[in-house]
Length: 96
Image (cartoon, rainbow, N blue to C red; front, side, top):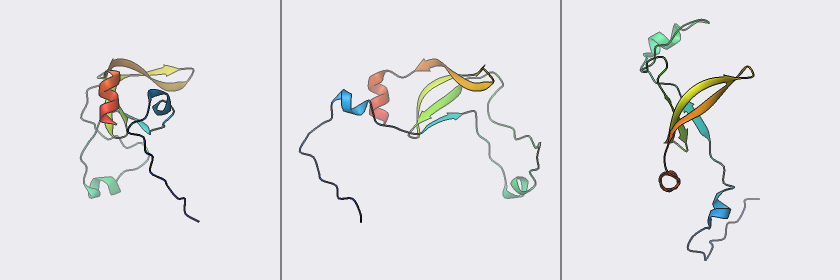
């Protein structure tokens, strides 16, 4: 049975309600254009050249929008992300 949604009479949500919303977060190391021929030839160990220089900041995307730039770090054998630059809270909310 499909859920029924009721339109709220509220004109806006307060910050408390917005803070619990979840969005997919993606770290973008770089990009590349490849042909299908090249992709079909990939094997274990293949290297794909990206459009960034080693050590350059990576983008943090939330909901398809760049929210921050940072660097990849290793913490307890796990990859992490250190923020270097960040949009203001107002800019981040506008782009969602």
